[in-house]
Image (cartoon, rainbow, N blue to C red; front, top):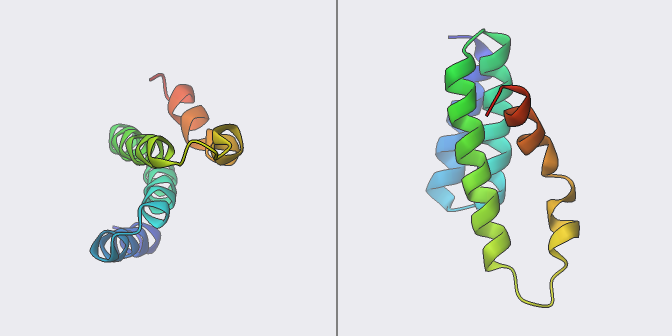
Length: 87
């Protein structure tokens, strides 16, 4: 396993341990990119799907006054990458 995947997996464990979903979805996205670079498309797809579940959970928990479009702006890259993989 290459160093980037190891680093992302360690970071993911820490994000989950401290209960930081924003950190978690970002780390899953980074891990997905590392997996893609290693040719592990199916594993990358799973990480992206998990990342999207977290993003959608965060969005649902936003207060009614929050601008959900602004919230989603930087997160579209996760959805786009999953779409490019054929999901």
